Image 1 (cartoon, one colour):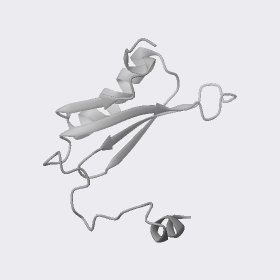
Image 2: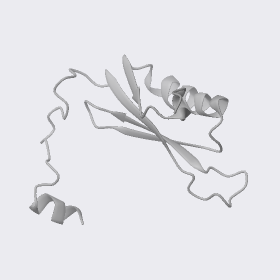
Image 3: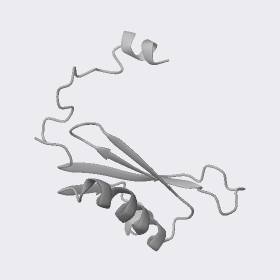
Image 4: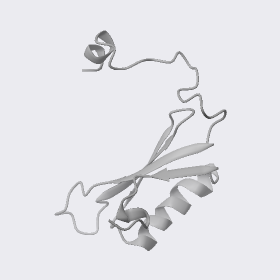
Length: 103
């Protein structure tokens, strides 16, 4: 599938250059989203993931967690991302209710 996208120029490879030129270093701007539920029948298992994407390096972190309660999401963000990578200068979320936005 990926080779078809390359042939049709749907994916542009950057040869190691910064993907987003409006940032000048890694972890300056990250984007976050919550994906799931992946298996709503699995009780007590990880049903969701927090996806964090660095716009400079295109590095992606995926942190699994059990539910979408605020304290669970905050714990995934702090312990799964910030304590490992540090706090980025700018975080952009999807604007959904998972990150405090009202619909």
